[in-house]
Length: 290
Length: 196
Image 1 (spheres, rainbow over the protein chains, first blue to last red):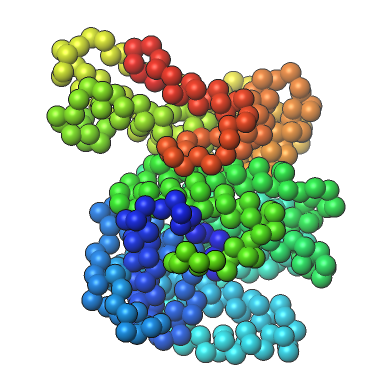
Image 2 (spheres, rainbow over the protein chains, first blue to last red; image 1 turned 120 degrees about the horizontal axis):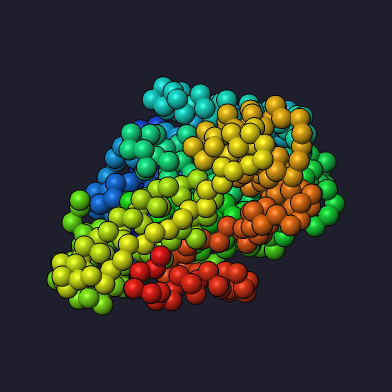
């Protein structure tokens, strides 16, 4: 997806850092085993966060028996494949595939060629995942279709455009039948989706203005200063996310999730507003080096 | 009922101070002020009730006590009183969580009064459409600047929702006096040792 949803490394306790890394590596391994060798290419922090949210309160089972693929001689502590990781793996491939298809559709033939090539390569992998998660696949197609229509109509409501993406992300956590937990999780993911959409729109604002492309924020606020009201509404979403998070039984994952919601997202938001996000995006979470 | 100690997340041989601390932190977390207008307010209320009950039960067990008094709290739901029966119905629908029907009823009403805009804002808020909620509340306040209900709703939007942040995770200064006030209110020991 976009990589906006990340913890602040400096503020993580060692145990939470290990948990995050183990989830990331576990998700990578699950994707490779389950969806094919190409799938880890679309691995991202956003779905790692989803995997953290979907993990049971007592935490996923961890092991050090598996090897990392990037340098194959390294053994790493990683989460064993579990239902939550499998779901996050399938869903990230499905969403990535449709986003690439979107890019192919939006770009000119020549500029769209690399994306087109990648989408062809990813297709068998996507097919497999879509068969396993038909509901989510349908929802993604439907919501991205709505989003496309809104863009064609030059929709001026940031809420309406963000709603399309927020509903998509809301569908990422399946219902467990436990009503209170489901409602809290839905609100958390809805506002996470809303926040991601708005953050991405703000990030693209200057480029879109220069190219004359559709951007909900530029249409909503026109030429007037948009940063203050936009930051306020995004912070409001963050606050609703935190409210929902407090009602979830996250157990071992709680502190990591709090770090992302209370520190990670606000930091990313600030950096998007002051233009330092492009640089921050390149920073690795795993190493101290910039 | 669950074991009151596990509700507060403390062991059965925790000291009174530890229990009080755990209780305060949880009460701060689920305080109604953090969930004003929040669609999940009822869940937080349930939690708050469970915490209050657990705390009272422990106090009773330990002291045979009579010093704990139940915390009655009122959630900010939309009052169902309204001059216009159609608006009263919309308020009822919003309170019962039936947002799409409330929206449909509102769309049918031709008379776009301040209350209409306020209720549209409330519907948008429940849907998570915060920007539209803000715009509608602003119009409502402009049309009827003396109405406290509308002004409170707008003030809540201008605060960015406020709400609970766990200890050690606040990275913004409390520059705004409302937030400071809310936090102080949550932190101060109130009468009877109960936070609400």
